[in-house]
Image 1 (cartoon, helix red, strand yellow):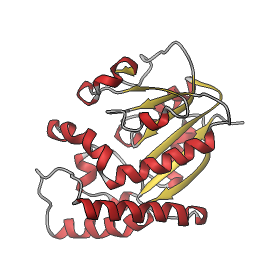
Image 2: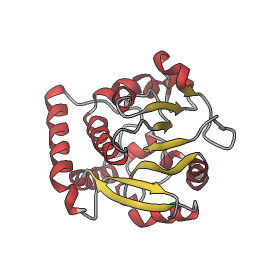
Image 3: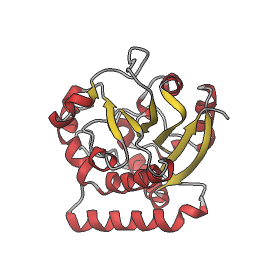
Image 4: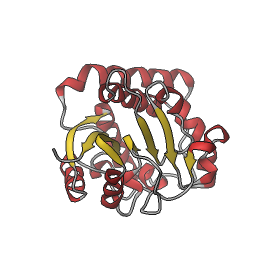
Length: 240
């Protein structure tokens, strides 16, 4: 990650409307996954600054894996494993939930990452994933974030199957962004974007309005399972 981008990443993850809205969806899914009265052990792979952890702690015990030490906050250092998520990561215990929140698209071998996560699951454990959706929506934002790919439900299901796992359920998120990113891609084809411009949050009123609109869309349109969106959320588990 660009050092300047890394320096502002924690602030963006807390304040930017997209992260805030996505995290709201993730927490709703966690409520659905956690059994009443249970206290699951949660592993957040590619956790960065652990922005979501204060709210996740209401559900279970949280720790993370993050290869970039500059992203790790001091208050989370004692439960963040600063290393790659590969066969070298061998914790003392298993996990009930493993998160890959906008992480798999960065990896050279997402199949190996999912397979390793599977080996760390307790019986009945689940893997919760979010990834960017639809290669047609590829823009400079993907380049800045060092993405390798954007997924469709079918292509992600193929990755899951090759990891000997099962896609339990999935749905697209941020339906309204599909059109907005298509437009952004068209504009970039005509007017090359500035290469030194890093992502930032919009002015507060705009930021709040976009967060409200996205939250309303998630609440109202989730039952419709629309076949498009700019992100994909999936719950993965072992077959059977």
